[in-house]
Length: 387
Image 1 (cartoon, rainbow, N blue to C red):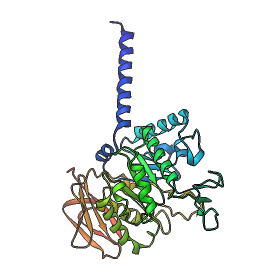
Image 2 (cartoon, helix red, strand yellow):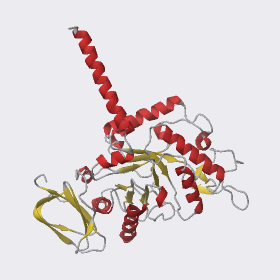
Image 3 (tube, rainbow, N blue to C red):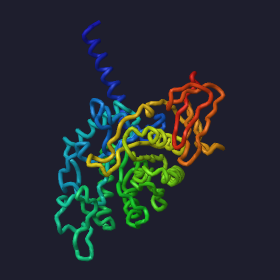
Image 4 (tube, rainbow, N blue to C red):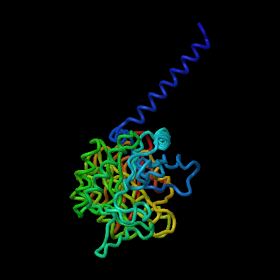
């Protein structure tokens, strides 16, 4: 036997297996990724862990859902600029593909989405006299986001709708992204329904679409989108958490399958508010199959949505064994393959959580059959022996 030839064939075979495995990871649907990913699930809206613990892309891959703009992915328009682009350079497409491939090598179950720009843009993005700028009664362009210096686009323009629908289809044709993200989603405005209908008509059925509707329901477009980014800007006030929970429950019942709802709360005094970390995570775990995040508030001078990574998120609960259920003491509880999650709402009394066999509290590290849980709080209780 030719030893060198045998080794070469083995190397070729190993390379082919790796290429096949890479292709399988790349071509899995969002539904397949969701069905294989356990809980808790954490997401990254634009910006991530700050400062990142080591390599920034490895830090990003800790999250199970991510969206960002074209520049973060390295995509460079080859015509039309930031708004009216018709495609991207081949080199930048390959750079974006390589970046996403590395993320999925690190986390094969990650859902990766790209942001659609449709509502506003920097003043330099289009000529001043362009028809799709939104204008006031005096014909002046309208400010959208003072912090970013962005101006509004006319979201009810048929030309803008057609452009966004074409761009959405193009994104999905690249085979890089699981879906699309739309910021600033005002569901009550009729233009949003017309826009989303135009997009859905152009993209594959399996395209995941998430919109940013804050802590509001989206009755007009829920049937067209897979979930909402619940950017709960009022969450530092515990009094708003009742509405947040109601909205999350509504979204889990009314948005399109597969559902991708993402709950984000903001800190009131700092990143060390661990009770809010746990409450946010427990609320997401007991009331949804979605994603959680605890993050900096937007009014800081730093980029929005920067956050820490919390050990509470490293718990491995596996898959849920059923829906979350109301308990007679006012808590919401949900059983998972490898533990039980309890959410004690704001305004409730402290409760005693009881188990037939000893459980270890992730919050306290204590192992016992009974555990005190204050309000507002959340905890995960792990069996002392594998179930």
